[in-house]
Length: 169
Image 1 (spheres, rainbow, N blue to C red):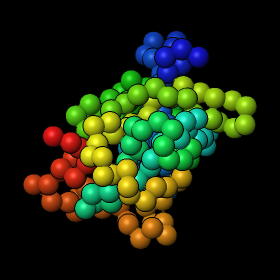
Image 2 (tube, helix red, strand yellow):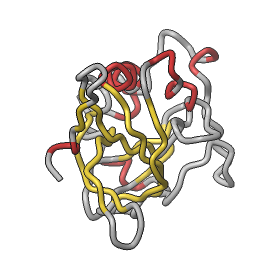
Image 3 (cartoon, one colour):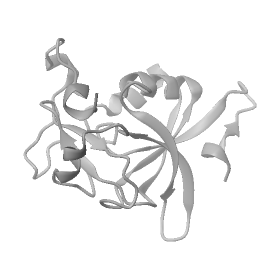
């Protein structure tokens, strides 16, 4: 498949994209409502996991899940694939603070034992090296056994940004 497998809708001629979500955007997680119709079109496609291994960590004072861009290091991370339109992709870019914080890259995900799909995935690329020593996860749940519940944005200190703990420089 070529670059994020772009599809065209005859109704509005906007391009659709596939996005792999692994953290708070998954069903039942705190930011799943960002995938609602108020932000554009989204449709659940399938559970999936990354074709390459990556370190999935939970970090910062807000217990945010981060997928560190260190291919081959970590786990084949479990998540969900959604088809989204341009408007939804732009909304997700706002949520993920792309490209200032997370960087959106196209990577392959496995839908099952035989099918793969090219999807946008939000990674942290310019991360502090010590983050690679943190506990890693194959799958994220905000209220998981890790004891690190996600801190909703409405309860956060407006003077602090997680990039302080995560990014170099």
